[in-house]
Image (cartoon, rainbow, N blue to C red):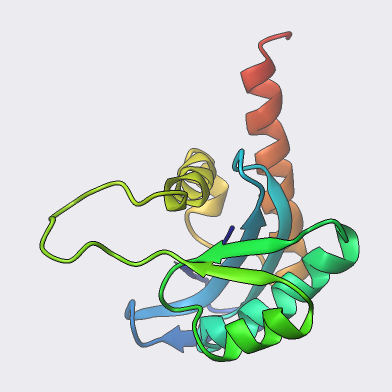
Length: 156
């Protein structure tokens, strides 16, 4: 599953942009997860890059690391360009649509990637992007996710 979220940054951050849809000046955190919500790939980039363009780069890097990937699920913003790019990689793309007129409902499969973002929300350091470089923010996301998983093991 693939998704992104926009996060505000501090003034000294590299790769900073304005996300017109969310009205946020900062960066986007793009993640690819498996069906359990575990992170496979994280990419941080300027918020002004659209999801269909940036998602292609993220899924390509995930495919390089995990060549057994066969399909990807995304929301409606991953249409057209992303679908063509994923098809060129040999992936099948499933777009999960919102159910119109149903109010707030849990979308099938999509809740898993949203749950991963909720886990990231438990780390105060990830609520605002304080890092100057995008690489260090990607590492902070991975460290936070590892800490979350270790806490869930309940062995310490």
